[in-house]
Length: 289
Image (cartoon, rainbow, N blue to C red; front, side, top):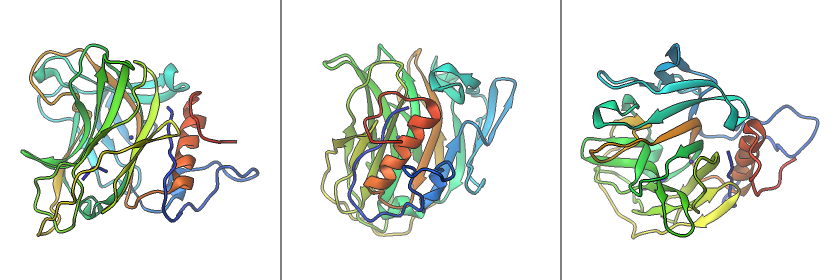
């Protein structure tokens, strides 16, 4: 089941947007004005640090999901004013050796909508990769040996050269609802460019991948059926490697948002315009005021 400073795509589906950011004379748009926001990690709120070393990052919606520094793991780095993001804060996750991977973990996370197979994920980030073609996943819900939902990125040296973004919903958990098994990659972007990217998934239908206001077809497999209950799982944030080795790659992360339904075109564009306006993104292709 797959369910991430320039994105927003055209999607189909009923709208749940409570505020139109295109209208003038109203308050600044907030992603929380779209119903169903279940997780919102934002670098300008909820980050605890000692100097630049990040010890934890709490969800801004309920505060109950808290990603903390695991024992023996180097901490991510807080940048209070990242010039690439319009001077806004970001958290940098990076790789060095397996023992030096900088990431955060959250235990016993319950998100039933991930098992239902209907949700949307949106992220604002900047990958700093240029030599590896291996996948680096930055958000994972699962447990050892299993995956409930995973978002990843990679760098490809093939034409066109750049970064790819994927959502891998391969699932080996015992679930109660039908899911799709697919792994899709958005259009490559040049290295070190801030982008907004995400996926909107409505259960039995193929997912729609979107990036910087452009939709990307998602490869979808056959629906898979599981029997059982939706378990609580652990979650990892910013784990920039899935293999052993020595790496020198990093990712600047500003925000991750997860909704419990498949967002439509209006909502997707609103989030893209929000990312563009807040972080000064110049390449967003949607229509914004």
